[in-house]
Image (cartoon, rainbow, N blue to C red; front, side):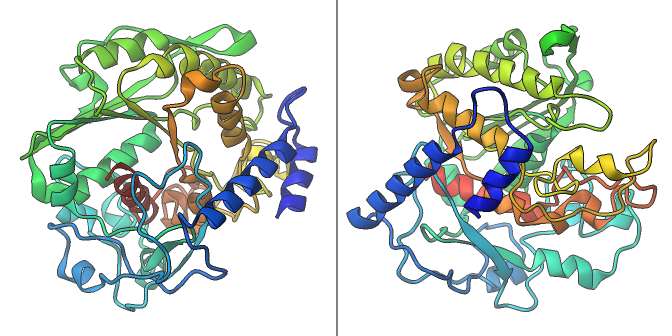
Length: 422
């Protein structure tokens, strides 16, 4: 894998002076050896057969019947076992229960205000008719972590342990999908909630904002979505979905949740609107993302009083070894045309590499010591067939959406978040 990834890096250099893959691989190896010898985790050569990790009180009887522990010999995952930058490896495999078909059905089991493309029912949410067997093949998949045993998601336990605390989710439309997953898992504990377009909400920050876009100057910022819900224990979950970063808007949005306490949590990410390789444009968006992160981490995130978790970039699957849109370049002019999503051998690793350098290098370093990373990149990279476009969205007209995810994957981000916070 190293040789392949280094080979891809040679083809797509990240930036001048940036190639430090060997340094980070050495750090990862040393950290792995430390964990092994310290006995904090028991590593296994092959992941054990697993079953779905869920104890949600609102889940279907089918999902409940599929619960069982797995990975014997592994310690349970918990908030004390996650390093600042956790290398979470593992694999996806069929549930041992042949009838397992995901944790819920979005159209029937989620709060009424959760409305998104439903990969289980694509024809009812704007997509074509898809073979049910193909859908079941994706929803039967479960993630088996190598480092620790993912604990079953328990909605009541999550609500109680997050009592009187806030979970603030800020990012682009990928974060919105994650918010929907959290809401669906938590339905049995929710006492009130809503989600709507930003422009239709009562949020104060309705003005025009821009984002710095490297040498192109500024571009308009798209404010997309707002969502909030609260549980019976006073656990508050908030979504603010904006396409790109603007420091002023971020500080204004956060001010709505003052006072921020040390036990509150900010889950944050941007990246999908900043493709390094895009059809018909150079790397200006990638340089804009670097510029935004250089400001965001040391000047904003490092100074916040609450717990900050950076959610890793979640892999796209547009072709080629990295899944980046550079794969379109071999196609006919006027494209791209894409009727499905392709596997990515290594994925768009440059986002994660850059964040690691920010967190541990001179730009932020010790000031960012409290910021953790939610390690979802590798688990997502392995699921090219679980995008909206893999199950019908846009594939009829050749515009398959290979960036947004079905809840067959986003639900595992939620399970991982639960394990990291409790």
